Image (cartoon, rainbow, N blue to C red):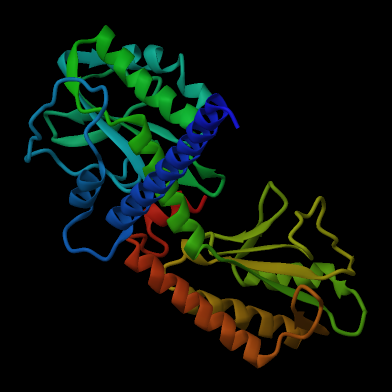
Length: 342
């Protein structure tokens, strides 16, 4: 074997080793991000988020935080669920200018992007919209990091951060804009945390003897229980705790008022309810009412009767997952949970 061949082999081994080492470093760094964001630590959410944000590769001049500023409304900007960037402009900027600037890139982002302006007179944050005619010296931009579609993509993050840099070039100001790699790892950590505790429970109710339900009577019962047929073909409760659909989870194209032959599926979105066990008990109570009034049975996906042991196991799983949510700083049923599990 020639010296050239030996050199090429050695070089190849070095490249493979360096790639493996880099991947291991990235995995460890992402795990640390997840622990910082969702670990069981003392301190408030803003402190945890600040710890998780590494110095930016490219950023505007750093400003001193104003401790007197009111907290951001969690429904619009959440330091855990979002990438939140505060921008302090040299002169108040019109919302029209913000909207014209962000129109160039915001439509390419699938995640929720919110703009908030600080009302200096009333000392509270306003959610900004296209028709807002105000001017603001302090603005926060927030892009949601994850939802049930997955984490924000690298492209989405680049568009968001580059858009903020461009806004500051057009309208002088200062901000601390994080590095895209750090935001991407945060997004993946948030998504991993959500996947670990996600549970959408489905209970199937089918005719026990093969005889169809009386559709009109069945609809009357579920409406008495607080369900209403929505425009998307699903029955939902007012507080959006439960949904009712065709067997298997499909929407009703048209609700059968005469005969329902296949049965229905009742669902409970566990992360989006504050007390999962109480909600599950309410769902079981409705099923019990249905089985009393109609000749039907509660079954699993294979149409086997759901035994008491299975119901107990479901209850234990709900309690476990909602307990884990609390440890991960995603309180079940909270605004944060409803945004992340959407």
